Amino acid sequence: MNAKPRGIRSAGFSMLELMVALTAGAIAVSSIYYVGAASSDHFKNEGRLSQLQTSLRIAMKQVTRDLARAGFLATPDAAIDQRCLTSGSAVAVEHSNNADNALVDPTGEHGVEADRITLLGNYVTSDQYLIQSISTDGTILYLQRDWQAFRRMFTKWWETPPAPDTVDSGAVQDVFRKDRMLRIETITGDKFFVQVAATPAVMPSTATDPLAVTITVPNLGSLPVGTACLGGLGGGATVAPLARIEYRVQAASGEADTGNSAVTGSYTHLVRRELNPTSTAELTTDIPARVVLENVVHFNVEWVEDQAAGLGTAPTLVATPTINQVQDLRSAIVTMSVRSPTQDGRFRWIARAAGAPLSRFRFDAARPGAARVRTLRAQVLLPNIAYLGFR
Image (cartoon, rainbow, N blue to C red; front, side, top):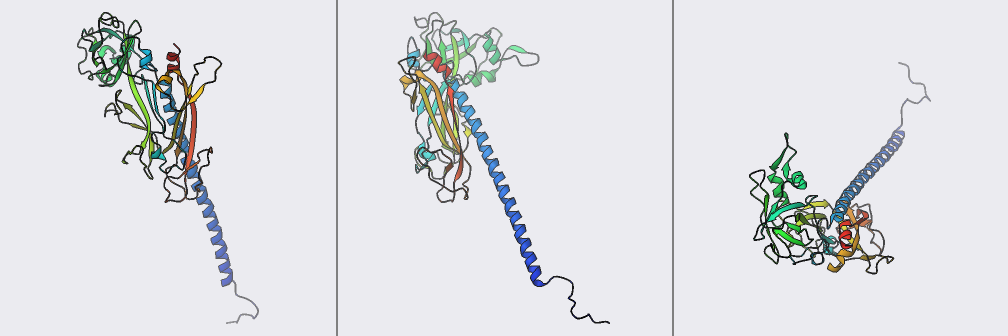
């Protein structure tokens, strides 16, 4: 065999060249991976924030819709609206300012609020119904079934073929639930606020029988049938079912609701529920509280009140309206803030300065970083209260 000529190197890379190439390749791959991971995290964070904003908009729409309905077929304040005998208390708006602050901000470092509002109005149907007569002892309302609103709500007109003379027992029992408040208005304009004594169990047996609803009257026991307040048997009066709706911030399901006591690291939600008209208990276990907004960290409601001085006087912003102010309310200003479910270690916690917008929230001081916050503010008119208050 011929030997290799001297001075001619063998083909290939040296060990040093291979190490340099591998190092450069590792740096390039690492850079690409880092950029891709950062982009993926950014995309996920933006998706979460988009979900937060969407949830916040939906919750605000629900709250403002209910606020706008406050007082519908009801009253700003029964003590002022009634013109005859007082039969119970009914107010369109009740407000507990900062009722649950410690729940969302145990340390008080965020400067947030957790108000609680209660609204009264016809949230059950969109109508009122004609009373054919009232029992002589004033404890049973007989509703006229030929009334168009009654046929629309409580008969099976939607069946094929239609059955407009057949009472839908499910609809009746859903609307006239035990303890739910009713507003009765006579043909002379007198009003009585009563409660359903028992959910109707017996439906009309023939096409001409009225629907019977048994009632109880706070402070009176029964309606004063045959008196100057309620002449005859009450024929021609109308009745509207009223619901007392509460919005409040409370601990997430599974955690103890401790009211004003501190709950460290608690996940708090904005909840909507229907209350018994005469207590703070829920109306019935059949209608469970519904979560309107998860991970809420700020819920504040302010009210715009007309001044008694009349036209040309600037309205006043009221933090907590008194009973005497309710009939003068014209609009509500709602501010809600929601946070991301977790704290981001790369999103540094900075204490909120006085007057600065709420942009980050620290609900667990033992963890690094902070949760991102999104806020929405809206003003909603209160047409039913304003209309009744101007009378």
